[in-house]
Amino acid sequence: MAKWGVSIRGVCIKSRWQQVVAALLLSAVATAGIAADNQLSKKEKEAGWQLLFNGKDMSQWRNFKQQGVNPKWVIDQDSIHLSGGGGGDLLTKQAYKNFELILEWKISRAGNSGIFVLADELGPKIYSHAIEVQILDNQRHADNKIDSHLSGSIYDIQASPPASHRVAGEWNMVRIHMYNNSLSVWQNGILTAEIIVGSEKWNNLVAESKFSTWTGFAQASQGHIGLQDHSDPVWFKNIKLREL
Image 1: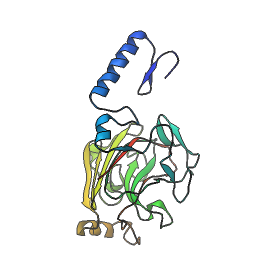
Image 2 (image 1 turned 45 degrees about the horizontal axis):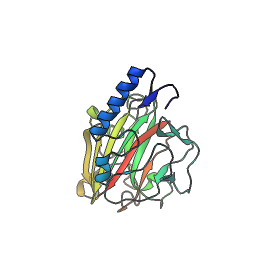
Image 3 (image 1 turned 180 degrees about the vertical axis):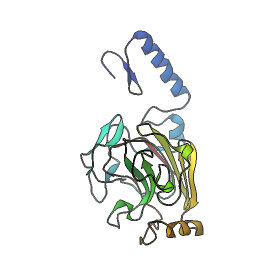
Image 4 (image 1 turned 30 degrees about the horizontal axis):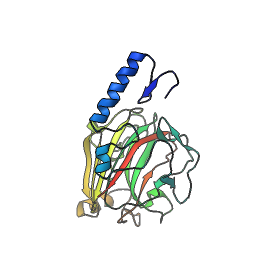
């Protein structure tokens, strides 16, 4: 909050009239059961959701195969922000099996990143065994020639529809639902992937992908949530998880 006004969703409000309008908007949001950024609404708490990022610290995260968080991962715009390459991949301190995950992401111009599920630390990289939901500037990044490499896709496995895409610099909402190997992904409210991990269909898609010879790929029954350092600036906020 600024000393000479109030702030709503990051916008500073100066005049008394604007302050009144902002207060009414906040009241309406609360009444609707929608939480402000990096907070849980009453309904979300009752439904069992937990915050994986509170907007203030990264206490529920650490670097892959490390105990702490590299200083290139910072808090910016009320978000977890990779400020430059070399920060290393992040993962949750806790591992999960059946869960629903929601978060918002924003990628820089020509940027690339990803969200990992079922990540373990048995391989040399976070992506050695984990499933990745792709984050990309679909218009400018060089890895935009393959449909299953566009944002919202299960990377190199199942392609997202164009209707789910937004341009770089805009916030995107992703929802990932994993229950007994049944994996569904939504981006910006549109279903982008739906498949049973380990099924015949899954195995056929993996056999045709870059992961065909990767021992242990997508074999874990539970794992960590991960955020990728692909050397490009990226932001994450409103990271919430509900165990099923």
